[in-house]
Image 1: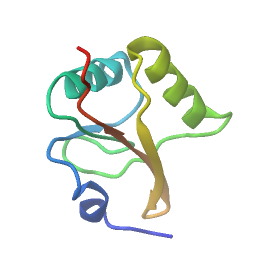
Image 2 (image 1 turned 30 degrees about the vertical axis):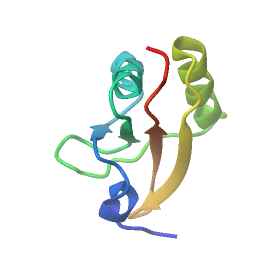
Image 3 (image 1 turned 180 degrees about the horizontal axis):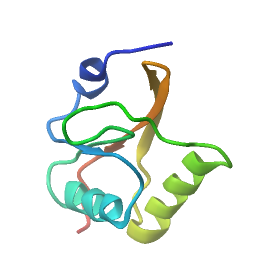
Image 4 (image 1 turned 90 degrees about the vertical axis):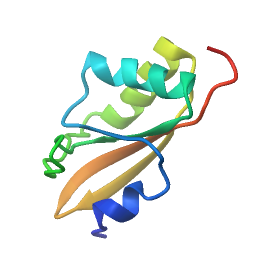
Length: 98
């Protein structure tokens, strides 16, 4: 099912777009947890171009596990499809522990 990017991010006060999984993803997770929380949308460029993300070989599970292992945070992750391309919305809640 195709959805609109705006609808995907409406529930977030702070939204960060990332084209791919990089080390900055985990720094952003930590920063959101240490402030008021936020959303990271993987598979979207900074100028909101939908490029998609390759989620073959359990990549979604690997990303969630790496977030949990590196930060101790278990995020809410939603898979969506926009214009035939897969993206991940990763929602990070404010943490009570820095």
